[in-house]
Length: 108
Figure 1: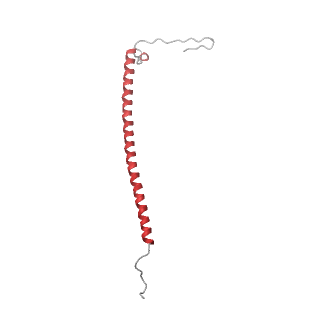
Figure 2: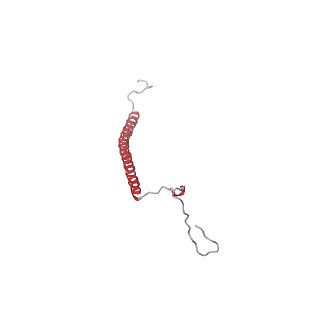
Figure 3: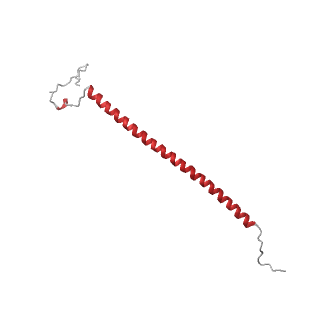
């Protein structure tokens, strides 16, 4: 665009280039090529979406497996805590019970 300082109006002057000029060799595509590229891009996006869905499903499956294992371990942990608590109670009962043999006492 060329604008003169004295002129109040602006005039857009587009230069004329030869057909073989490098500046005219930009990659121009017709509508058929654009449609083909759009279709390829669409197919690529669909494939990528399918891969992401499969990956997400694999992650969900793994989370379910880990959750199930966690629940089993948690149940085992509760059982062991209960068992240890009962053993401690039994140990307290047997240690506080009077012993039948008395050591250190002479017979009369």
